[in-house]
Length: 103
Image 1: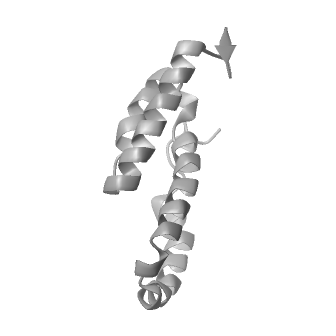
Image 2: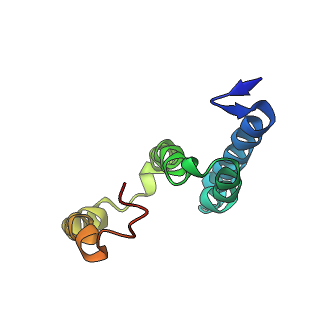
């Protein structure tokens, strides 16, 4: 029996490690990538980095929503223009990467 092309044991291991990683990330602020990335990469290298990014988006949103009273909105808005520029310029500074990543 397979789930998403993986044996059932491997799929359950991936779900469990992402669950534990998100629990640690929500409580300590770090942990999802460190715990789940190695297991997901060993299971199937196509999971990295997309699976981690997709798991972090709802996690970060829910933590921000629950802690919204403590967010420094003034500080976040004052830093937003620099972050937008950095997001646009970063890929150009970094370059195209290795030939293996340019498929």
